[in-house]
Image 1: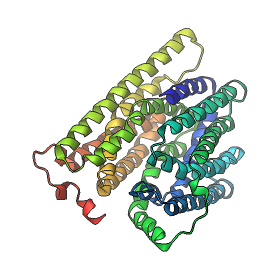
Image 2 (image 1 turned 90 degrees about the vertical axis):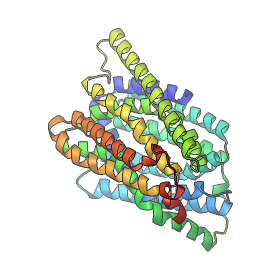
Image 3 (image 1 turned 90 degrees about the horizontal axis):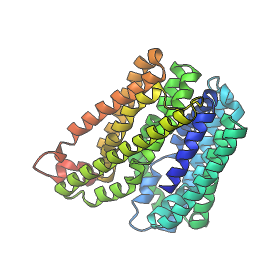
Image 4 (image 1 turned 180 degrees about the vertical axis):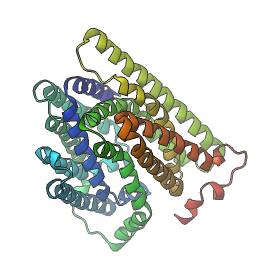
Length: 399
């Protein structure tokens, strides 16, 4: 919560003082980094998380494969920027994209290991330090260097501070050890099952910016990027505060229909309550900023009202996805992600040409509501009086 409070201030400062064009370039760069990071995900994270007991050989292999795939992603992003005609506008800020990919890849293993060891006090201290460093950079950028390069530099500073702290905390992944074949086979089994699912998830997270960049003008993308920064605050102050506890609870209670159904309802209520509280706080801050500084450009524009319904439906979609993931139902999770991505793609192609960023938010709202309706139908066991483990969790028998 301390970290998010720091980031709230930084986001409002940057969105009020930095123009539309830098945010459009910033969003495009992060979109391309996100797509290329698909190559860095072969299901190795769930494999490491699922180990009953952490083993140095498995930790080391996770670090090596993640780092190697990060280098591959850097090669792809370099080729797209310098050898294709689609991203020539990103060449001035190119240096930050491979730096972000490599920095995140270097500390990703340590982050998972720290969470597995329940080192949350140290993680919290690292996160606060990373947030403070990001805020200091955002203040400098907002007043002295209002460019996309400055925004990306702030993100890179955040990654570097977090990565340094996590590698100092959990440095076992840096020690060379012998890796037997059984370790490779273990990660290979997860890769066969989860690679497609993880790639579709990555695509779904970043396809919105790609579609707006393709079908609209830079000013629409800049406005969308600024409003998305604010909506990210709402998500962080609601869903992100309970997601780890919810996942652990769903996993522990998956054998009991009644307990699972009760927990799903409780965490959904908590997430929605947090969303409403965060939305109220955001609106209050925006309205206060308009009253005290009428000439300042704030992100609470007509576009923000189009984002509000999406902020409200997003926790419901998240809750279903998390319940599928934590109760060993990859098939339902894959269907949910696939349905949401395809619906968003089709609806965005219809709405964006005429409505721009508003059309994208409309597509996000309709696709999210439709996916939630499908998830509700697929999860009939949450509503019915009977409970059968084989009917509810058929995938467990083959995992």
